[in-house]
Length: 257
Image 1 (tube, rainbow, N blue to C red):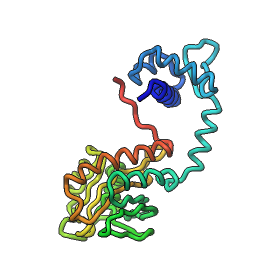
Image 2: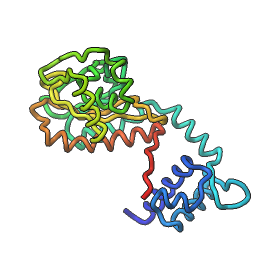
Image 3: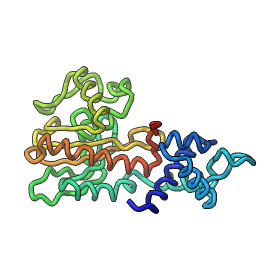
């Protein structure tokens, strides 16, 4: 990565952190971002010159966003739909994996397919737009449920976990353990739990408030998506959903270094 690119990325990271912690000082920002104070100071001066931030009062030690930043952010979030935010990412996922990429949103106890980019493979698992899949039997559904508080899951699904194939999880303790695993990995995996001939991996898309509003998945005929393939595709799906979530205004928590 070039020095210029690193400088630009540092400025954006500083801008995001000011938005989250304002009014913010140089030392606090440097500590939270793991950057040298000199780098943070240069970024702050650049952002001030560009009109994105300003000092909080007469003393140039603490910084806040300007109305320009608020106006741009509000317009962007209000004008971007989940489908718009995910469009380019779906194509990237298909290129990276060679398999079909799906975008789904939750509707009741099902996930609904609202966009897809098909694989070039002649043998494929085809789901028409508008198709629904059960939340508890699909990777898309499990990804969305895993991003929710556990006490909300059963009221959405109902008392009974319906069996669709011999691989469907129908025990609540086992299902909650599965959701905990999804949370730890960052992605959900499905191997024939809804339809015996389909396997997939998925991760949740979060909005600006951190709520799961959709999920992205990569799916294929079960015979072509081995456990090794699912483990390889999982991180790609996580990265894809992180990009879409960021576009929708979600900000991942920063861990101090």
